[in-house]
Length: 107
Image (cartoon, rainbow, N blue to C red; front, side, top):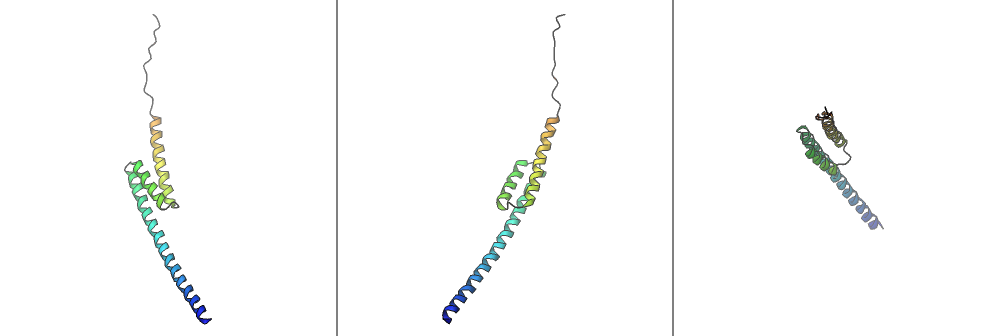
């Protein structure tokens, strides 16, 4: 009976060690994903500063695939949408070209 107890105890110790190793590995993976996401966000901001909205959206898409819960993603996305909206608003505010109207009064 004592051999069975010690085998079960040994099994529990091995399982606990394996779970600890998995936990540490998981934490490293999560940290690595955060770093990668931050790099994508930085690249998106740089692309936005240079005026390349498509490239910025590409980096945001990649960052979203790595860490969809990162709040900084949404802030940059707001900046991108704000830049797009402001450029559209500028285009809409341009006055329409004046047309020449000629009316024949029959005089």
